[in-house]
Image 1: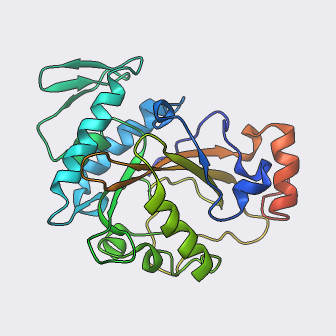
Image 2: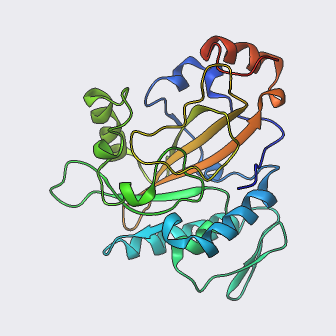
Length: 267
């Protein structure tokens, strides 16, 4: 997989203490739900290849979640209707990179070819205590595999993460229960990588953890949580930035050295 890097990071979660604590969420405007950056064309070409060649690895939809997937598809189109660079025509959308995307395919696959974000659908059936992953288009997984997580609850999904304890699980579930369609929230994470692959699925408990001093890249995921107004399903979106250490500002590098001491290659 070709390494795709952005020129810089507009979001550096380690610069804000509250963003480094779970769940570390804050409100965003609905208009800011989806993002586009300088790696758009390269990331979208990569997404096109993965969707065409490895469909079963990057896409899943459980029976009963079809209505939520269709609603998410329509919400993405509505959002792009006001986004610069997109042109909508009968049966297709022209992306800012000039690629024509037909709209007659499975809803999540179509949405996954239109935006840089990976999109996960979670729903909570009547009588259940937690939301469950019921569908996703996941082209850029970081240390997890869609086939292992589909159908599982939030708590079960996060079992490999030691800091995701019972208290955090209760707070996250309560947040999911209270989110309103007009008021999405956002969080971000930080991952040190020795390799630059965006498509990095791994089995549970097998994480990409570079040896000390071997980190070469900084991966940041902007994660948003949004409620669909009709089906009431939740959308967990992931916008991924990958940059070389040299792309950070001096302030970002200094703070990162304190947060992840010894993680990176010597300058």
